[in-house]
Amino acid sequence: MAEETGMLASKVALVTGAGGGIGREIALLMGASGARVVVNDVGASLAGEGASLSAAEEVAETIRAAGGEAVTNGDSVAEAAGAERMVQTAIDAFGRIDCVVNNAGILRDGIFHKMSEADWRAVIEVHLNGSFLVSRAAAPHFRKQEGGSYVHMTSTSGLIGNFGQANYSAAKLGIAALSKSIALDMGRYNVRSNCIAPFAWSRMISSIPTDTPEQEARVEKLKQMTPAKIAPMAAFLASDAAKEVTGQIFAVRMNEIFLMSQPRPLAKVHCGDGWTPERIADELLPAFRDSFYPLERSADVFHWDPI
Image 1 (cartoon, rainbow, N blue to C red):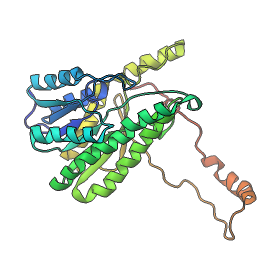
Image 2: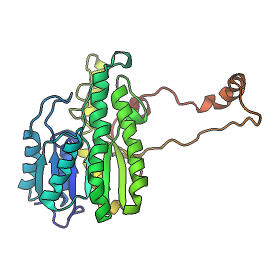
Image 3: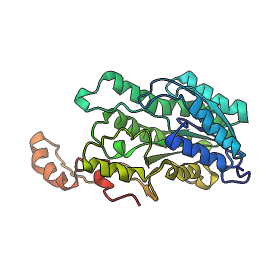
Image 4: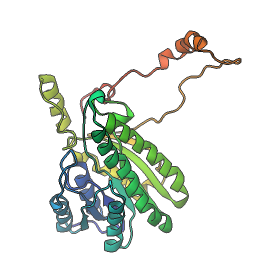
């Protein structure tokens, strides 16, 4: 039975891309915690092709079988009308909306100089534009009721860096900026906005190659980080217990939770009579060199095994 007095009792949550992986686990936990859930999923392939409601329906039925309440929606987050319809689904079914979890995503990986415009635009459309469109569709309702919570999925591919993911990395870093802007613009209405950078084995990263023993070992470690490990943070951020938490970026890696930094000045030099290119080379470069960030990937920063 879902807990009528659970942490999310009386809340209505829309979870996009909830037919599998991280989104599925978030929807299930929110349902078990008392929330009424709109399970959104277009049922597309990893590359965003095709459509089916079967995955979303299975998740909703699992929530209902446990005593919770859930409905499904098969609209695309990349279409403004679809975003409006999925939010309206929550209003029609449950009378309100309290939380949006922007989780839907696709992958079209490729080395930058070989990446097609179509693959660039497809990923930006779903991840970044989709997060905007669904958030924007919910905003009037949050404003009217003077409360609401956004939980966006970012990635260390954008926050730190990764090979072969220029489109995905750009979208995910853009989502972090979008979240901060929402937190600033809607704070006066008691609306919160936060990001999670999830480390989890799911269909989204199952395309990682395993051509060498080193790659195989890495994948086996990644498989330990199940999507269910991400769900508690999302449920917490949707709850009233997180009423003081907004504009933040968290990373969840198995049983570890990190508060991620956000860009701030690291160093400063001043030239009272102005700079020339030569003076920059002679004075700024030596002063800043030790503060430059190396070209790291997520795995270089999070270099220890998941714990």
